[in-house]
Image 1 (cartoon, rainbow, N blue to C red):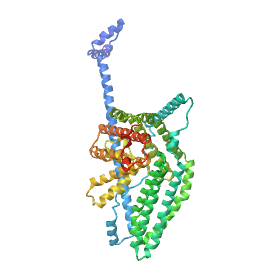
Image 2: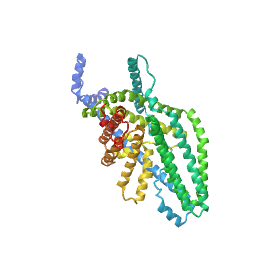
Image 3: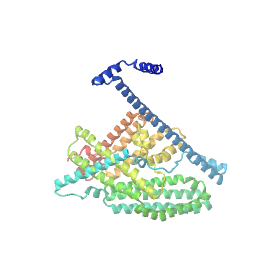
Length: 542
């Protein structure tokens, strides 16, 4: 009885388990008879459903992560901007309490000086590519460009060996491009040393005379006129005359003309920034000049010697400058393999629309490579090397211009140094003079200044006037700035921006290269003024 009572529940429990699956008996019979077990389809569907659910959950997590990181980055940027503004306001309030001004002086400064609330604030930060290169995926793109350089070198060596029967390692194009380099160095030294000496002597003399003179306005006008005369002759006329008189090759011309623009910009920036302390506070002008003298002495002697020594020893500086040198050789092989053979043959033919279209599209690849090399060599390596030598902490010389979905954002992020100068010393000053009435006119002035300066550099360095870049700036640049504005979002607008940028580079490389060869193949012995303005490639038929 006990066994039966004990076995009853077990049998009922077992029968309860066996009720819902009559197939199990069949499967058991099949298992007993050695039959195969069929795989139920419900299990496969459930597994696929679980996998798809996991993938969807993973995608949602990735989107959530991206949104959170974007929101976090925005909040951090806003916090840092507010912190910088608060620190600047605290600094200005502290200065005003240490050097109190009367109400008359405050009103005079308010009327004669542009507002300084939005002045440029510098913070210690790395360049964007330095952070991106720490990611292996981005580093691989850098390695791909190095591999492409190796292929350019190998193909050039093989072709030269087949044509000449020997390895040609003369680099004649680089030797020509940097010709008369000692003259470039001597001219640059004259410009640089005069910039250190002449403004200091004039301003120190003015500061010593101004406080005790009865003709302060006359002395101020005289000092300002001499400064403008020096600026026009030594920084404006001298390098341009040296370039045109001696027929310097393109690379040497670019060195002198770009240094000319740099010194002019620094001169104008220093005069504008120190206008308040020099002209509106005459009693403190002499002490300001003496402090300027001390700073000039330190930067001109000990700092330069220390940084020249660090130039030879610091590994980061050596790496940046060696990368600049590598980019020069990269550009050399691009022109030798992709540009010179194409344009040398095209320039021997008459104008043909089909050949022109093919030339533009064939020039896109070398144009884009030259654009990348110019950006990486100058805006990243060159500026970072000198920032390291001068211990300058703010390395944001550019932003993520490659992610731009509008040309307005591209213009702001491609070259932050030039953009900031145009914004603070052209755009904002124009708005201040017009009392913020003509913002569109201020933007037009900025585009005009940028286009004129770019065309001036190319005209002087190439030796001919062909305003292709000026037209692209003033026509397509202005239109794209308003049409492709910051309201355009999404990947499609980034694709449109890159397409227009690629096409523009092809147009520049094609037209300027054709004009360069036309100037050589079809020279004019005594050109008139109209001949200098008319493109030679339109009528050249060698």
